[in-house]
Image 1 (cartoon, one colour):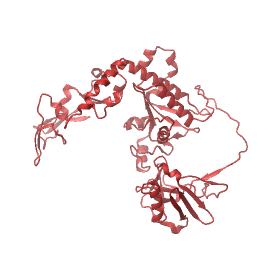
Image 2 (cartoon, one colour):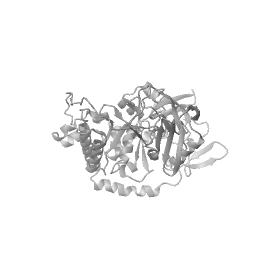
Image 3 (cartoon, helix red, strand yellow):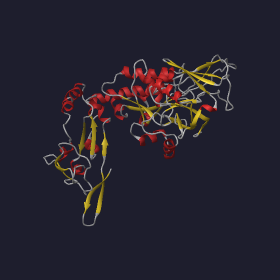
Image 4 (cartoon, one colour):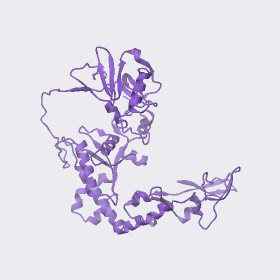
Length: 461
């Protein structure tokens, strides 16, 4: 970062200097860090990432020659370097009615950064954590353990292929360039030294090569027989995320301005491209069984049956495709994310899709369509359309049946803002009376409205 290092009162000029801040919170969990070699001005660690607890306790390493940059000035007011916040125990004197403050003056100037009562119970609990690190043989043994797990994970991820030969996993970053097959024939220590850290970022591809949204993967992993926690998104590193996904600046802006995608939301696919990735990490407590369970989860959930493992060849895989097929069942979903309606025959719209299929959606106050992954009770809402009567009947346990007219007289008014459905924006109209909104809101326990696509035309497409 750039700092106003010195201020010359004589010529009213500010002298700028660059300082480096190194975030080693993740790296310090599984490897030794040599600050003399890296030589940052500042570095920070989080102890809960190293030991598993306590939360809220970390450490800031400050280079002696750079500590003046973050020291609070003696007097506030017009001083350009004055800090705008301080807490209890951090000052010698402060005036409530005037912009005047003097930080705590004692042997250590950095002690003025401690506000209020220190977390002494959390600090004491660090001692058993340090003892455990020593018991395990130190960071070198943890590094060997975590990297060995990561190597095996990458090897198994690279071997996951669909029946047609399409690779199921796309790995990003340094691990995408590591030949894990050479691990068995090379010196273990030398190979481990050259390997990246035990963190792997990737995305999943379907049978046809399209991407699976990371939010979908996260939800299904949490519902697995042995629930799995994974991190998804851009991991607070937008630069690396953009580089890995090969997204241009214009695409990032378009995802935000037109797709409505912001950091931390659940919009994981826009125009067929992922907005983030999936990340798995290994630590001192990770086991081979953890790795195996996750790889089996990916295999059983996302990889097509009769897997053929890739041998790095480009030959086309040919299958015998039957000349005829029999359609045994048909389902339509009148309301997005709600239960299906089984039909034996159904009309097609001029656009070529089933009439009324996903033509309705439940939206919140911001115009965003509710999703089954967030509101699981939506799957218990059973809609049924009667084409002859022109009605939509909705059933839900504990509430009387709701009948909605499909005619234009049920339209309340066009929605003032665009509806967001899976990252796409489309026009829509609120549908039905206040009683309709009240029925859905009561069943789901969240305020929502029934909306109908305006001609079903997506703005993005």
